[in-house]
Image (cartoon, rainbow, N blue to C red):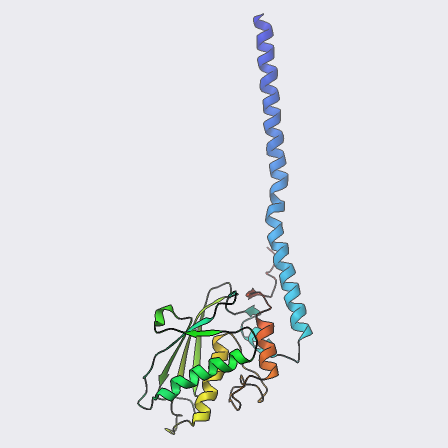
Length: 238
């Protein structure tokens, strides 16, 4: 009787051991598939993004951003229809006037009217703003009228934009009202992620000549926000 019990215990233990080994083996063969899937998805997204860029070549100027960022798409995360919160810090230059704040409001209206999915609202709390505008008297370089600094995460999404507009050029001449409006429209384009355009007919041309977003400006915004933020270049193999 005792011998039979020992045999039964031995057989039961062996069966449990084989079942545990089988489960470990199954887990070890299944685990790599869970790691590979996201990589394949990212590769598919990169391929699709490069196809969009190739399709719109000549109709946009997004390539100038990608060449300067080593193929990193820098833009705001998808907002789901939420407007950008804009704060205006008045003053900052002896020449400042309330009409300059009006230029910023008009700039937001012109980008909204471009019908590219950009919406703006205003807040009096700069700490709660996505985009902050302020003024200074001049920059050290020629006719430079504005500067935009973007803050972004390492993965590509922009998290905040700071815009500084000048009231005078480096030669101490006041900018005209048209130039001040053009600078506000141009720098707001940078604030939403646009690079410079090589075409003088676009508001994103480095020396702004127009104050209304062009067809190419609008197409570039649409292309930028159809691409996923982050690198388009595939990472080197490990």
